[in-house]
Amino acid sequence: MSSNIKLIGKGITRIIKSKVMLSPLAGVTDKVFRKIVRKWAPDSLLFTEMINASSLKKGFGTMKIKNLELEKGPVGVQIFDNRLFAVSEAAKQAEAYGAYVIDINMGCPVKKIAKKGGGSALIKDRKLAVELVKRVVEAVQIPVTVKTRLGWDNKEENIDDFLLRIQNAGAAMITLHGRTRKQGFSGNADWEMIGKLKEKLEIPLIANGDIKNPSDAINCLKQTNADGVMIGRAILGSPWKLGEIDYAIKEIKGFEEPNIEQKLFLIIEHLEELIKEKGDHGLLIARKHISWTCKSFPGATKLRNNLVRSIDHKEVKELINSTIKTLKKEQIILS
Ligand SMILES: Cc1cc2nc3c(=O)[nH]c(=O)nc-3n(C[C@H](O)[C@H](O)[C@H](O)COP(=O)(O)O)c2cc1C
Image (cartoon, rainbow, N blue to C red; front, side, top):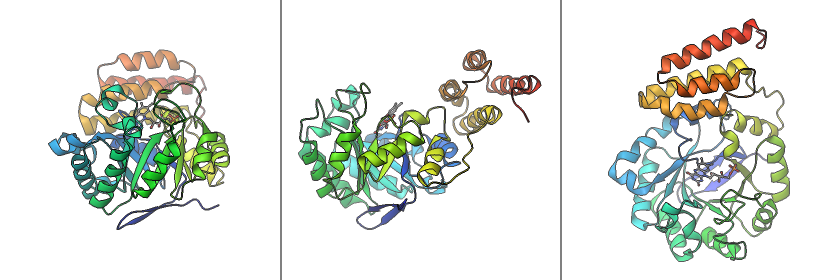
């Protein structure tokens, strides 16, 4: 089974050498987080957080996508908006900054976005969705992809018609989260339905939803026959997870999950990178990552509570270093 996914753009074809991709996650998949995920997943396509087309135009969003070509692997930029000109201009800008592909968000259920006609609302406005894909394909050389859901309200909305129209408009790949907009994150992702839709498409289809570990990923690939899988929530606090899944899909043995000490050092590294990138504000962003990663070892809850209350990044480092010493003394970490 080939591990490659071929994405055909108007002028440039991209080959992705991994079947596991990182979901766009607002507030999470920033440059620093991608750098950390990349350590274990050199071949995977990682997506930026969704970026509003106007924020690029006005300049403040550009910080989020600058220097993508300097990252050590392929990065896709996800754009959300429903205005044709704004999205195609934003796509051009992202391409100039080194985006490997452009993804258009047609799945976000957040009311503020859907009410304005963006994200999942595009499932209802198929004419506009098609036009959006066409315009962006026209605007850039790189492949244009779409991430969407199984429907707006329910699964009887001829979602196959929607996906086929997106394909015919020139999309190079579709990622399908196996829930409707109405479901939000409730219930289970419907991999069976993803499998049925896969049969109808010619472009690569990526299955998304509820893939938490290597065996989920392998089962999902088998059940859906999808070309790849995309991982969202399972990466929170476990940035090695993408690499772990990539190893399993490629049947490479020897993946080692970081031990407690390595996880604690990872928190320090993440924090330092965030401070370098964003100054003192970096500590605020680090807090949620700390609370996701700092778990499942003796004393983790107490340490987590202390870490997330700390208002000084130096104190965070001291707390972690002294915890490592204690865990070593008590032989909980064996060096
Ligand atoms: C915190 C968070 C932020 C998200 N941000 C985005 C986003 O910016 N763009 C997008 O298309 N989906 C976004 N999603 C949806 C995920 O990309 C993914 O489709 C969903 O979580 C299902 O996959 P999972 O079960 O692996 O988490 C977000 C989800 C979460 C939990």
